Amino acid sequence: MYINKNLKYLRNMKGVTQDQVAEIFGKQKAAISAYEKGKNIPPVDVLIKLAQFFEVSLDDFVFRDIEKEGTSAVPVKPTPEDEALTALLARMEKRVAMLEGKIRERDVELARELGLE
Picture 1 (spheres, rainbow, N blue to C red):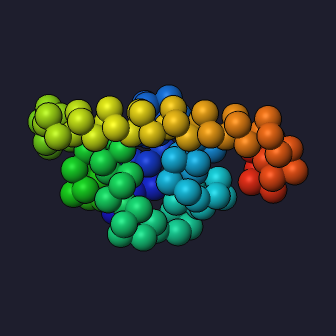
Picture 2 (picture 1 turned 180 degrees about the vertical axis):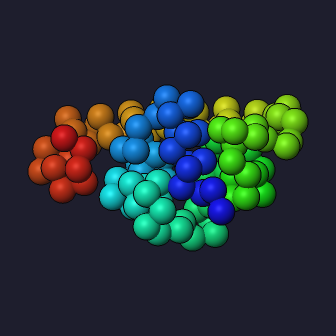
């Protein structure tokens, strides 16, 4: 299995840090580090999400040395549904950022409790 090697390689190719991957997937940086070192294997749901995030097949992510062999799948063009969901996610992220700003302005203590400092 090449999970650890592919995770590190694809993360570097995409230009994201372990901290960023951890934040995206709701994990601790130590968990991502352990995956990359081969100390732990991500749960199946996380494996699927990682493969989707790096735009490779799950089969390639797990069983192929992507750095040496490349990937077997041709990149898939996003469907209109994918694009609609991406647009919806962007709108939701803006709304959340606005609400976080209002919380910071109106209730400093609550913002601190929520980690919005």
